[in-house]
Image (cartoon, rainbow, N blue to C red; front, top):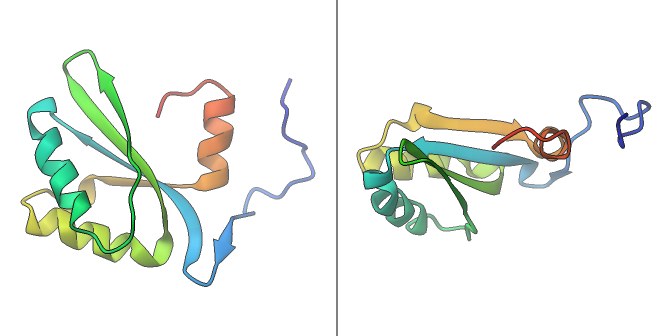
Length: 105
């Protein structure tokens, strides 16, 4: 049983002048977590990351952002030696629905 009404279109997004609100997720080895957080701190817009650990195998950093800022995030990653393709971007409503269904970040 879902708490989400079926009448809501799948393409619905939370949008503003800066684009759609998305959930950004980056997976790194735990030893690179501090460097990743420093790279994210260099970005002009505020980031409030959630950090998840997967039993010493990896760390996942997740935060909301507007689509128009994704280029800044990729550039900060590139400048700090990370592969900008490591970004996983999900529509915010889809991310919320995934959490409500019990999916991991």
